[in-house]
Structure formats: C-alpha cells, structure tokens
Image (cartoon, rainbow, N blue to C red; front, side, top):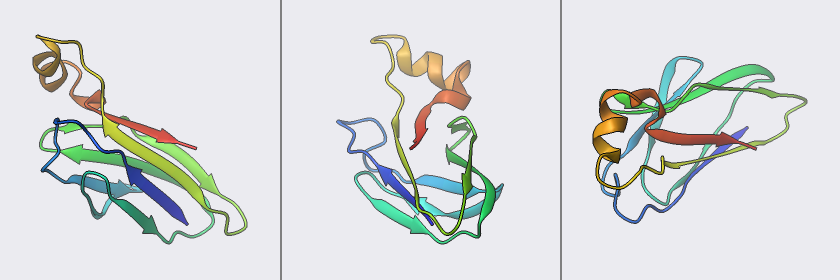
Length: 101
C-alpha cells in the first residue's frame, strides 16, 4: 500500500488538486491537506504528481511483502520574486516537492 499525504500549503496551489500518476497511469487527485491510500501489488513502482504542465520528479519505490510505503508532497519552496516564474518555465519538473519515506 502507498499512503500519500499532501502537506498544507500557505497559499501556492491551495485550492487546486495535484494529479497522481502511479506507474505512469492516472490514479486520482489529491487536494491540499489531504491523505490518500493506494493499494498496490508487491514490486517496483513509480510515483509522479502533476498540475497543468508542471510536475514533481518521478520517484521510484518498492513494496515488499505487503508493506506500507509513505510519501508526502507540497509545492516546492521557491525564491521570492522570480521564484514562480522560474519554476513554471525552467524547473517545471520540480514544481512539486515529492518525498518517499
């Protein structure tokens, strides 16, 4: 099983859902402050989150013997002033901070 928690954000993307992709397939959406559970078979998997054209980096993980893997996400911390523009243009695949474990 995978448990994904989306941390509360002060303002960035607060009212918008992130799309959850497991092993490249759409698995659902997660809102600000929400926790979702995904039942997965044992073995290697990948996890990626998207919003519009921006995303997280793809994270790989493995489930062994029915264990539970924990992941969390939040908007990436961006530098003040040019941060948002920088992340939606050049760092669009790091717009969402995704952590496994």
